[in-house]
Length: 180
Image (cartoon, rainbow, N blue to C red; front, side, top):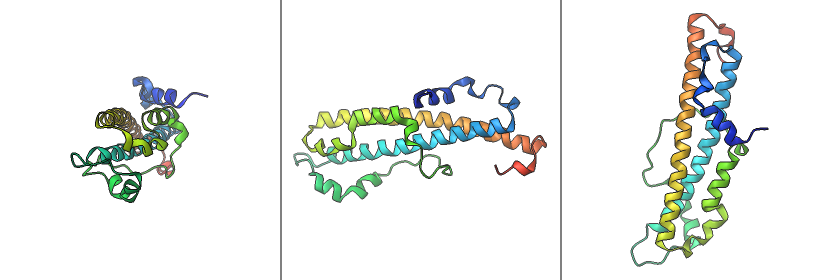
């Protein structure tokens, strides 16, 4: 069974969409679905990364000379912290899956946990500004990489969707299967 990174590499390979116009309708739908599932998993992972980054920023963005917040005050203010300070919104998509396959992105989840595991959040108050800044940089780099991969998947989903629409418009696909 291929690993999730192998699956993602395969989906993002430039040859993945080669000869898309010669694929069967079922193959085109299958490919769109697997890209949508991978995108949903990456989207979930991206939200985890952003949440941890927001928590690191809560420790970094304190008045100069003041002590780091204790864990109980962070937990108390968690909803506001995770709301993020004016986070830019990206293009929204209709969610395909309500519960993404978290196993699908296992390697990236391991990488996130290596940077800042959920259990490591409690030790953030013990880190100095340089260590917090380093964590923030590493989380931002991972978030940027995941975002780039999501954009690549969006491009593939759009191409496959356009192919399906074109087939229906041209009469090369029956209307019975339009909503599948």
